[in-house]
Length: 82
Image 1: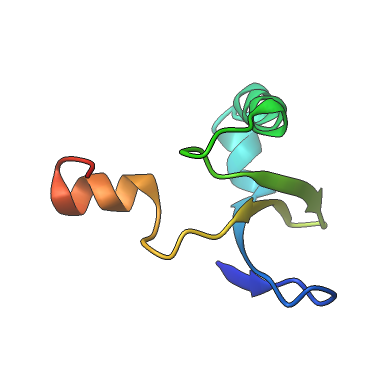
Image 2 (image 1 turned 180 degrees about the vertical axis):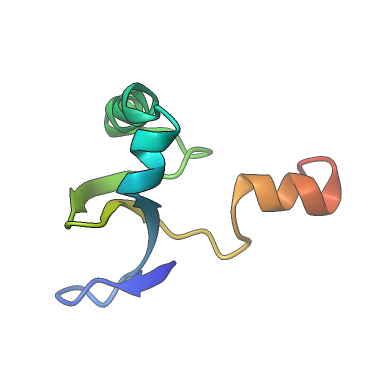
């Protein structure tokens, strides 16, 4: 999901994950690890994570926006990176 940061006007990506899916697929540990890793990484080839928040229904991860789409979509489309 694409969003705009109100104060800066920067385009960001929101990863929106249903809490029901997190619980039903036993993803709590996986997402905790993903958030910890993303918060420590600083590399030009890895999207930056700016933060995360939740509401009653979803967990949202705020990420750097990549105009070309997700890594998964690029791999599915091109079969290679480049």
